[in-house]
Image (cartoon, rainbow, N blue to C red; front, side, top):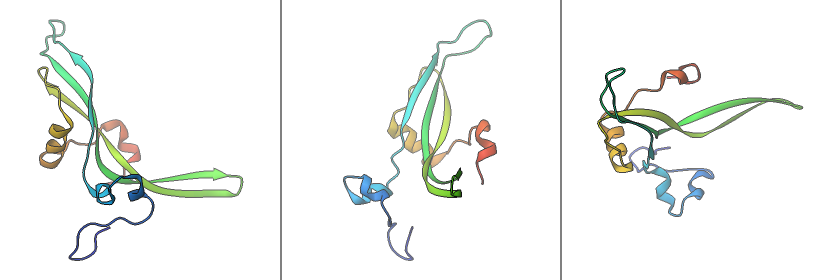
Length: 117
């Protein structure tokens, strides 16, 4: 939540998960390389590194049928992204943060049925 003319603020329990209250409002994405392809002849391809990383926070809504009827739950989750880097480049968390700020990757296609723009 952001109050008009002021810095972003956090309400509820989420900010209590952080050592410093204001850390809850900072973008701190994480990325990991999960597959390295050294390249090859069949099929012809150059080397590449597949990364997966967290993106900007999103609001997730889940409904659950219980003995007392349906219940809806809301909460923050991080976006999921995949990034294929040419060559044998491995991204750091700082590199990933910069990429998210300048050229955010699109959502992965297999998540399209559950993401509302």
